[in-house]
Amino acid sequence: MTDKFPSNQRTDSPEYLKRKKFFSHLVTVYGRKPVLEVLEDQKLDIFRLHLAESNRSGGIVDQIKQMARQRNIEVLHHSRNELSRISRNSKQDQGVACDIHCPGYQPYEQAIDSMDGEERKIFIALDGVTNPQNLGMIIRSVTASPCHGLLLPTKGVADISPLVIKASAGTLFKGTILRCESLVLALQNLKKRGFVLCMLSSHDATPLSDLDIKQSVVFVLGNESDGVSDNIASLCDYRVGIPMNNGVESLNVAVTASLVAFTAK
Image 1: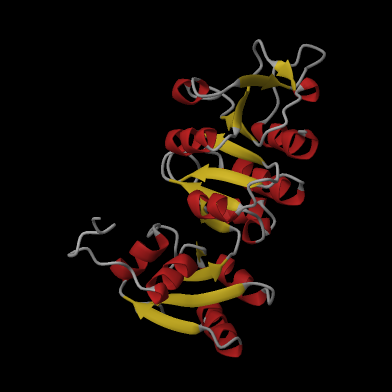
Image 2 (image 1 turned 30 degrees about the vertical axis):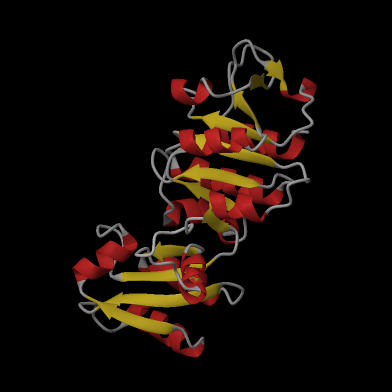
C-alpha cells in the first residue's frame, strides 16, 4: 500500500487551516467615509483597520482612529503602496481601509461542502453584471429572500466597492455571497453535484411560474445588453423567462434578480 501523500509533501496544520478559513470570510472596505460608517455600526465584526502612514491628522481620520480605540480594533500602519495592495483601489481608498468578518462571504466550494446534501437549494449566479448599483441591489434582494445565496465570480462583474455596499444598504455584510474564480468551472462543478442550471432569457423561454424542478437550482443572470454569455449558456439546462406585457422587452437585471429570488420554486 502506498501513502496517500508523498513523504516530502507537507500537510497544513489544523491551526493554519482554521486561520485560512477565517481570512476567506473577510471583506475589505476602503475610503474614509465608508470606513467610518462601518466602524459606527456596532453589529459588524471589524477585524483590522489599515491606515496609510502618510495620512495627516485631524478631521475624519482622527474620528476613525478614535472609533477604533473605542472598539478595541487592531490598527496597522502601512506605506501607500502597501495599503493600495490591501484596498486594491489606490485611487479611491484615501489612505484608509478595514477588514470586516462576514460569515456568509466565502469561497463557494467551502459553502457547498458544508451544506446539507438533502436540502434543496436555490442560488442566483451573475454573469457579466458590471454596474455597481445593480450588484448592490441584487445582493439586497437575494439576502432578503428565501434564496440560499449569490454566486459571484471574482472577474467579469463589479468589484465589491463603497458604491456596491451603499446600494446593498449594508446587506452585503449579512448575506451569503459565494465567490468563485471561474463561473464556468463553478457551474460545471455544481452541475456534477446535481444542480440544475437555468439561464434567464427573453427568447424561447419557459415562464418562471411554470418551472417545476425538484433538484437544487442555479439561476444565471447576464448583463442587460448582452445577456448570458455563450459559454455559460451552453452549460444551462433550461431557458427561463418572465413574461412581458405592453411591448416591454426586458427588465433591469436587479429587478429580474429580485423576482427570481422571491418567486422561484
